[in-house]
Length: 477
Image (cartoon, rainbow, N blue to C red; front, side):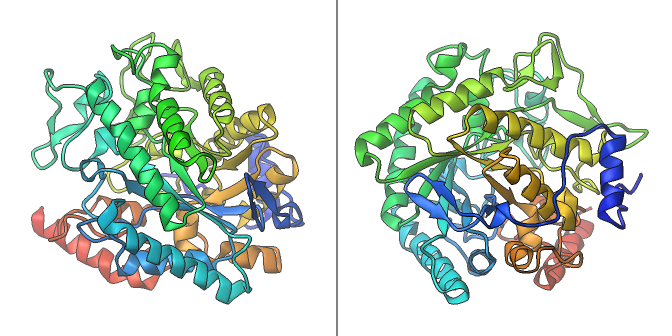
């Protein structure tokens, strides 16, 4: 398969952007990224951030473990002024893996401790943490919960690849129930309880996670679901509206609200047996099973409902919206443009720059429609050491408020420190988007049921962990 990232200079990259007819712009003089960003009642000291990036490295009961502390402390030292803390389940049954963080009374002190140590590390490095804004992402993994799937509606494509028994790869049977309205009503209260804990712990904001086709994301697409949480847009946004209302009733404006949303779910893809390239699974027309897609041509983005959602959230008091798209499980080239596919994935069906541009264009349209709202942008990591120049251009052009990276921060946690100090990134430290972190995330063959994930090429601590995961795979094969 082709090697896409072959650029020896920024001019090489600009030439490819022009050849592909894309709108990505690059600025080499770093100015706008250094400016502070007002977020609600907080001020982030610069316009660079870290996306919610799981390490799958907590304890089995959902507390942060040694590698979790190490990762968060490195983020604290890294120079970004907005750290969007990783997905943390509001219920044990909603965890995506056996080592995902879980927020409850028993784990609150440990979450407070990791927050304290992250802020302390930032103060030691920069003298103050007054301009550091840290939040926590609250989640229920829904269809992708590791113990059993919780589905918002029957999906004719995904139900065939969602397994109720992952070892035997038994797909969801035809009589498998969707989550009931009663379950969702009780889950609303679980989110409220988690929000109150998050506030008491001391986080600056919570993210009510609505992305990547986890449960709340799937609810936004539940056009075929019956009952008060499905069908029309008002019903599909009922859950998040109720949760926000209940949090406001309990806490008023004391806790800042944010959300990471999918503005384009896309179609499920599979690997073509001959070429290895990703191709869409056969799909019906119209296609009412996704959010932010054109139902008559679901390969195309349709921002009408995502714009309605952002307007609704803003009016409800949400201060920051993080824009994403796709799913790591069935169309990873959309969510994370890559150089080499995940271990269980397919070769990219498009030049990764097209995926980067898709992220930037959707984010720009939303930021321009809501200029007073803090919008956090995604899609930068594949650009490697040139990502800073795209971030600078987007912030300068008011196409985004904060540019953030996920995988890129796992590989290069101090990217902001280097970028803002010397005006460029070190090519030897950036994420190569070659999928080792995803391979570790997918590896389950140990006594904990989950290997921790990190950057194998850039962080030597993960090299023996990756070797252990590979040996286990070979042994089980």
